[in-house]
Amino acid sequence: MEQTQAVVRRSRADDLEGFEAFVAGLSVQTSTRRFFTPTARMPRAHARLLIANDPTRGSFLAVEGGRVVAHGCWAEVAPGAAEMALVVTDAIQRRGLGRRLTRALMQDMLDAGMRRMEMVVEPDNRAVVDLICRSWPEARPRLEDGLLTFATPVTRGVAAERAVA
Image (cartoon, rainbow, N blue to C red):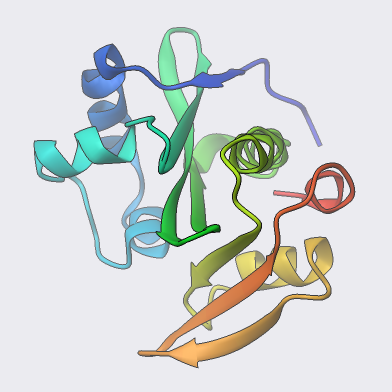
């Protein structure tokens, strides 16, 4: 596995256009897997929300050569519980960026007082389902509206280190 030199950092408001270009460049399959619908162009208000950081949400980007190549975010869905999601551009998937984003997101959730996290995935997305099962073996999926929701405690270290994306 060839590692990428992308820098993982917290997103900022001035990342909006770069984030929008990143989303527009995702393949239909990757876009659909992440947003549950093909999303070449999302409403600007939604894009702003996805890169926002405040006490109830966090967002990180991986940037390489001045371009956004990956995004991860979390948002509080109940007191002390957050949903986490991430996406890596097709060309550099499986090079460790997902793991690096996961570590940043997990630490940010802990710092924000989140104790549980959820991850929502399509049942036929075997790569991500397998990743979650390897990284968080204690997480048990439940089927809701045709999607699998995995819930697990937010932890530092071990689970994030096991995450291989």
